[in-house]
Length: 270
Ligand SMILES: [Zn+2]
Ligand SMILES: [Zn+2]
Ligand SMILES: [Zn+2]
Image 1 (cartoon, helix red, strand yellow):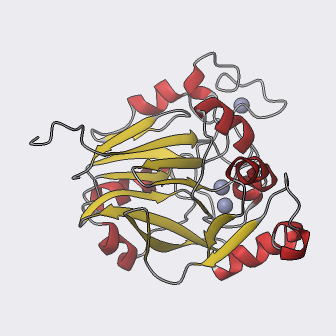
Image 2 (cartoon, helix red, strand yellow; image 1 turned 180 degrees about the vertical axis):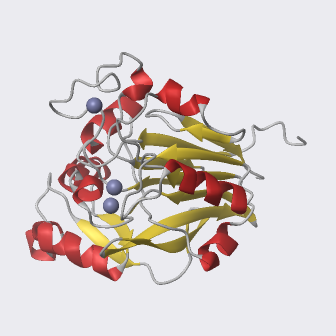
């Protein structure tokens, strides 16, 4: 290292790794929901990327406020949305605190459909005539092609997930495919597999063992990870079907179970 300066890093934090109802589930007394292992406390699925020039949040779950407090988030440059299901957007109003700290509107990114749903539900945040200090205000950006934020290239990955259009995201830098995030998908079509082929880390929907109409199963997620030759893969959006420890025991080498608070650190070239 000629300069003696530490290499810039991209740190990815799994804010939440649970399915839409979270784990534990309200009113459930199963061994997973009663587990005292902190890795079995799964808030709704979301990640946070801290890059040298940009802090990026992916989705605003109903647990976003607690996730932000837990991880000490205090500045966001952009929020990316995967899709407008309730478990990915219902923390949206808590973006108000970031607007307040930063003294202005926050840029949000999503498909045209996702942004339209956000604007329908949180109409007050999109109206420039209602720019009241202390409340949420956003600048929407429609994702139609790859784009860049703070030196990180972001490639949208459209994947099937029932009736809504859903985006995964590939995060790259200087030709390195660092991370692919596919939180909610029933399948990963061939063109998307080519785009993310050889990615260093894949975080992918691994809902449960039993088939589901709009989510990958654990074996389906393993198939994708191995087919695209991911360096490592982490399952997310998990139900209360198995404990972290029991689930991990069954997985092949290179496939892991994500958990809330898990961090991945990538050394970047300056
Ligand atoms: Zn979801
Ligand atoms: Zn349970
Ligand atoms: Zn969903």
